[in-house]
Image 1: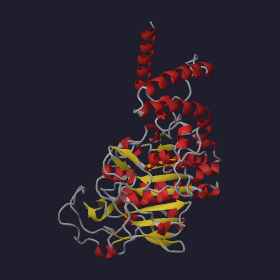
Image 2: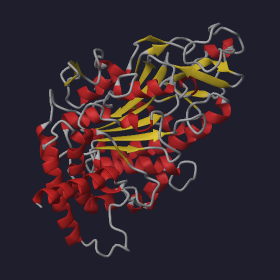
Image 3: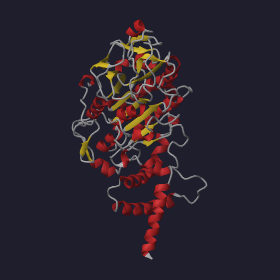
Image 4: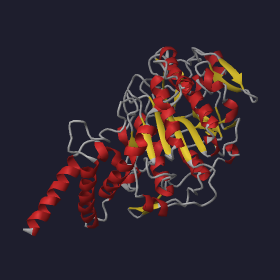
Length: 471
């Protein structure tokens, strides 16, 4: 009879655990036992940065139409100077050289060129450090997005947020350590693969939050029609489930998924107290919400997520990703058809919220240990696709950084006269990742995990810290 009872519990646990959708399990795969996280802390040097907000422009933001002014394109406009054969990853043969349809002006003490599509960010260039010669190994969205997040072109590798969570653990134990805020229109290329923990324990993958939902964390509280779900019954049920789960996990030490789920229930219980405050941006004063653009349909979605990122960072979340644009041919930065009509609405949706984010972080005193990164998976071609669009181009694109440990108002690297290829100070994702880890007190060459006989790291076998942009 005892065997039958134990087997019955095991089957019920399996059915519950592996068929459950949303709820605590949805929050689950994003947090580690607090005691284990604390024990895993890796500090190779004093940290300048404790938390990171990464702003990712999905689709390939055009550098020569945003931050990388190329006056030569005005002289070459209309000439057929591009490659004669279609390069790998291009979606069409190269067209004529195309000047930017947007005006550029110089801003700040250093005279940083910024396009008219970013009037608000332009006011803050003296606080940013620009990487003007970013490059990648691909012209294809999926591999490019993987590479900028994990350092590899293929799936299965941990992203930067997961590595940071694994290395440093959490700052607080009542919210996820790594939060992802996707565009309301959908997930980016590779879907949740961009936020994966890869071969690291599953607890380190990103917790995806639907910021536009009335309940950003679904099923955190029981519905009104479930009267039996009282705090007492909830606690008793979780206590029994915890006992069953731990016995099951002890028999399967090599599978990290169950430990992640166990941790999720502990986290969810704490989030019943912390989440209502943390995720409710309407608790902010009206002037703060308006500064982020929550009063404007154009900026409301991205602005809401930037404000939420600020609130989460303020409450101890270590790494937050805010994505602009979903995968696909429209509604993102993948401007194949018409750069004149497709880029401005995307730029307008993020420009005011990003400026508000930086100002608000400083006003709250969070700039002392917070790093903000603006990037994309690759750039666009200096020659037209069709007549008015721009094709994929991994040869050169722009990234900027702001906040703790960053030398404000500097640039590093330079693309060629067309903006087609990185020329001086060529910078890969490996260098960006090495620099971020360095700022967080981690030596990128020493943060390794043995996997299939290889000491894996975020920067693979590459990468150097970009000292030129460090304060």
